[in-house]
Structures are given as C-alpha cells and as structure tokens.
Image (cartoon, rainbow, N blue to C red; front, side, top):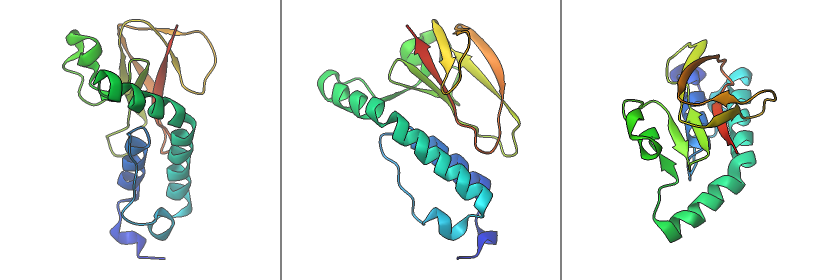
Length: 149
C-alpha cells in the first residue's frame, strides 16, 4: 500500500462521488492503494451508485448525440432563475446531483427546481421543487434527487 498520509482521503472520496455521475469516471491511482478502509468503502459506494445510474447515463449520452443537449447540465439550463446555483448540477432533466464540496460537512443545502423530487434510494412523500432544503451528509453521501412524474 502506498503512503496514505500524502493523499487527502476525503477529497479523493468527494472526487469519486462527483465523477460517479459524469459520463466518464477514471482514477489515476487505484483507490485501494491509497485509502484506508473507511474511505475506500465510500469510493466503492460511489462506484455502486454509478453502476445503478449507468442506464440513465448511457441513455442520456445516446439522446445527446441526437439532440445536442448536454448530459450534465447547470440548473440554469432547466430554469434560468437558478443561474446562481453553481455547486450542483442536473443529469439530464430528471436528476439533481448535489455533491458535497465542503471538507468535513455534516449538512448540505440542495436547491430543487420546479416539480416534485424524491431523494434517490429513499421512500416517502415527494419533495416539492422551487425550494432549497438542507439534508444531512456523511462521508458516504452523494445527494441525488430524481424527478417524480
């Protein structure tokens, strides 16, 4: 195992979470070589989220070749009034992704566009859009909200 002290392990995890919902994901170094077990598990969770979302990502990539619309979109692409929101993005029109960007964060504000939304992997009543909510986060958290139709 390489020297773990030279790697910002939380940053590595947060990068993996962000990349997990991008069209391409790669690592310059094998995560298991530089991460302790806790951080490695968080990266594995991000990869599992990517595997779960691959049909969506591939579908959007195919759609993009026909329509020219981007796979990853700023919130303003869907709603110009959300141009100030630059720390989250949309995957197509139906997913809001709010990666954790603050070191040591325990909560994350998420702005939801118009519509009804459901936090990926949860059950319960949909959350109304056109609002900013605060959600708890952990090292393993990747906040993704799916549009409820």
